[in-house]
Picture 1 (tube, rainbow, N blue to C red):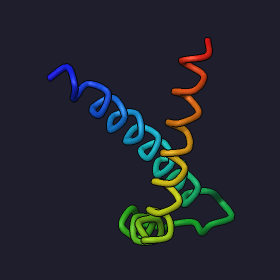
Picture 2: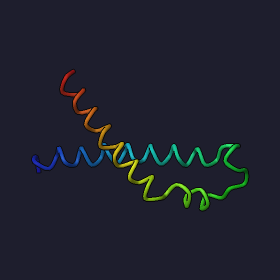
Picture 3: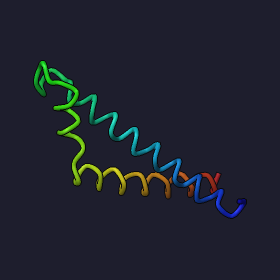
Length: 74
């Protein structure tokens, strides 16, 4: 189990970064300039795309590598 700890840590940290990415996209869907009266399902359909998922995963992996680098340096 000790050997899986770094893997679980990476999964949790990247998952959290992806969560923050999607929550930011969702908040952006309900701004005044993006259309008033939009339902949650309309907003979800707009943000859950393959392009956004790819951006989220790549960003999460970059963020994880940077945080691990800083964690080891400091």
